[in-house]
Amino acid sequence: MTMRTRSLGTTGPQVSALGLGCMGMTALYGDADRGESIATLHAALEAGVTLLDTGDFYGMGSNELLIGEALRSAPAARREQALLSVKFGALRGPDGTWAGYDGRPAAVKNFASYSLQRLGVDHIDVYRIARLDPDVPIEETVGAIAELVEQGHVRHIGLSEVGAETIRRAAATAPIADLQIEYSLISRGIERSILPTTRELGISITAYGVLARGLISGHFTADRQLAANDFRAYSPRFQGENLQHNLTLVEALRKIAEQKGVSVAQTVIAWVLAQGEDIVPLIGARTRERLTESLGALDVVLDKADLAAIEEAVPDGSAAGERYAPAAMEHLDSER
Image (cartoon, rainbow, N blue to C red; front, side, top):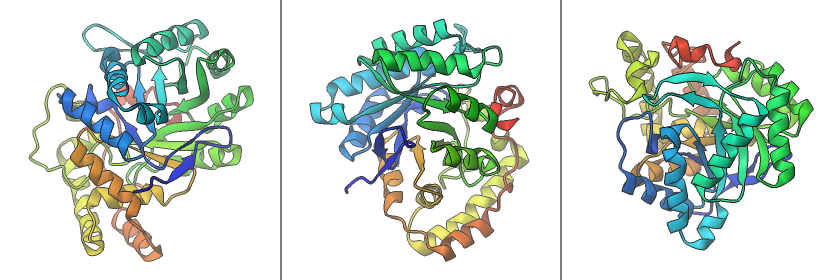
């Protein structure tokens, strides 16, 4: 397979049409197999995936260490093709609790220094604060990243989960390559004001949650028991009647997928790919099996009839439950 590419905005790099979100390899989705995670990273690079996404707070830095190990053990040619997208700013306690976000310029540079060390690289390709710090103007946070770009420690500036006004203010401060934000068949809020704004400004979308954390992958079942360290156990869309309702949407999608001879996950990822060349889905595969399935979405062609059928099966706003618990929703500038 020859990997297709897309550009991260008018100022950013060319990246693989699908990126790999690495969070679940060390955090928030229950226990993970380290050996399989590294094998999956190697397989992704071998398949032509270039964009690897992480956060310095995933597993308290262990996700970056994992990626660093995978890159060191990969063939040189594959290692050199990797483009690293890193989120920073989340504050956590030793027990894993969340304590807000820090976007002060001094903190930005401190976070970057540690990420460079853990990843074992001399620069970060795209750097972004994970959530807006309400106490620090976005101009100051972006300005600090711009200084890191001038110094060669960062190549491009990204944003994460911010609204249209914040996007405009950030873009007026320095060139922005992309906005990382949740976007899927059941999370389409960005279509109202955020996506029109990024398109006006020449900023791409790196879409996470395209499978809604596995909910609309076709593999999640109502009787699945989630571990205490799996945040989906507390996610509104995975609870009680919400879950039952959302899984009925998946069954409607399954009929469409079966008619095309593909999986539900491939159909859902292909739908996101079809929404525009300025959108790069991040797939959260933790195993080589799931990676292979997700990459198969690149071969799925959805015509107008397919897209209409998908829209009828899962209309905008049809999901039950918010995408995060109330405390986490409060940190989303994109939802204001």
